[in-house]
Image (cartoon, rainbow, N blue to C red):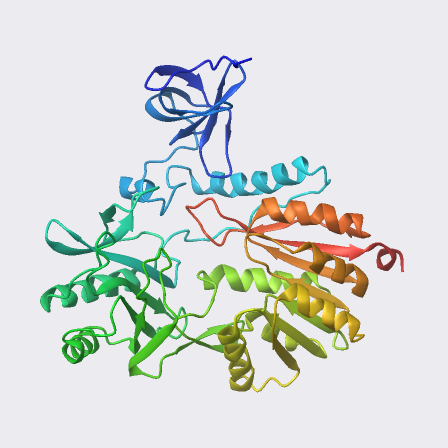
Length: 460
């Protein structure tokens, strides 16, 4: 029997907003039928226009807010909402922190794993924090433009001030854009798969202020290459490296696999946790250094490490957590699937004269199983997985190895909660509040630290 849906597309309704989804959409219900509303906050009374109707829910946009939430603030720029750069910019920052704490609690409640979630650790200045930008370049009305895509589209919205990025990076993007215009460089055209420049990437060291410019091109040939390099060097004094990355594929992936160093050594250096790190164009390096240091410091404290401990760092990247841990333990084993990241990690260990780290290129779940077979007996395992969370076989290996503690650094509360249920079934407990840390203010994303303790080690 066909279910009767209580709303129709393109019709208006008055609703009261009761909640926010993990994507930052307001939630209202008509006859228990959920409607997800852009730019609407809990407690608000809103006139909405239904934009899409599905069998079990609908989407709408807010036309008029008849009663405003006390947490609503004026948006800085509508373009940040249109493009998804800052989807929570209309929500006061203290309320953003509460939203993120609540989101973790909701995901654990769904999984029926009882936990306490501590208040989110925020930033004093919750904007201009990103140390890396990847900005699309496209032709708009006959002019080369930089900006960001409108949500769910490939339509570029020209933007010069990105609000959440280091302002020196925004400045550099505009300088490079104007140089490319001056030399008539053709932007990439997705439909014809022609043109030269696809994206401009800028990285800037938070402490070092060293800057890297990466020109991501479709073709190997970059017209006026020497002149472009000279102009960038003349106008941007912080630039220590200029790299051309070639991505000739007809793909949504931003970067290709081939880098050509046009100026400098192809890396920049920055500091984190008092250590030096070399960062290459393809390196995964946390984009919010201020909050990353808080996150890592908390992870080290919560791991309750001693100088005799052996630690495994799964998903070790370029070694940021591993090398921070190495200062306080006997030995750290790091594993990462990206070979270039492991080369970076080994180099970073050498730069910092750290000799008690061993880095291996492999899938984390495969390597943990191998180490377990080899009899490696870690005291603590640290995991910082991608958004998809942990592979079940990795959880099995953790249980087999039986470390006293597993410290889980998560960027996705939903997969964290799912993995927590599996780990508790394997004899691990969460005995302290989960600690959210706001790495991405003005967005819906949240990082957190959860400590799992082996049940028998709790009573030891």
